[in-house]
Length: 125
Figure 1 (cartoon, helix red, strand yellow):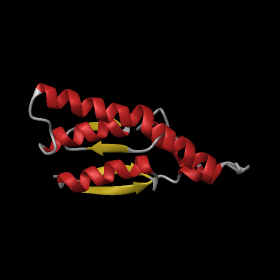
Figure 2 (figure 1 turned 90 degrees about the horizontal axis):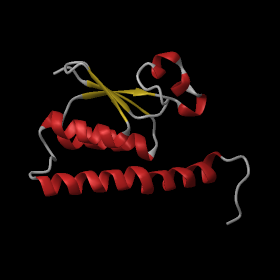
Figure 3 (figure 1 turned 180 degrees about the vertical axis):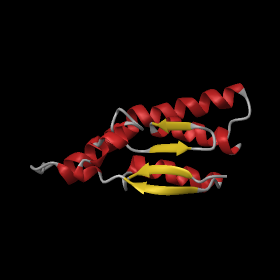
């Protein structure tokens, strides 16, 4: 199997895909995207993800490029045959919790990261 290419950066979202790749045991290589220098807005990266966000995986054996961390997690589960729900109820529960994290928990932590680390003015609270 050709290693899956993981385009990522050291952020909570970026770690999700690498943790999943480790958990399911698929071979992969890391391509660092320096988001602090704007590398996610370069044409070669935008060709992979027009939303200019990490992570992105490229699975050359399957001819697939997948972006958005939740979609990547589900793709890797299917691709590896591991960490997949068994029945319909389990699949619904898995999707529910994945989307809850992606739509609520993840963005909240992202905003906290932005204001604590990157914002030019630091909040006193």
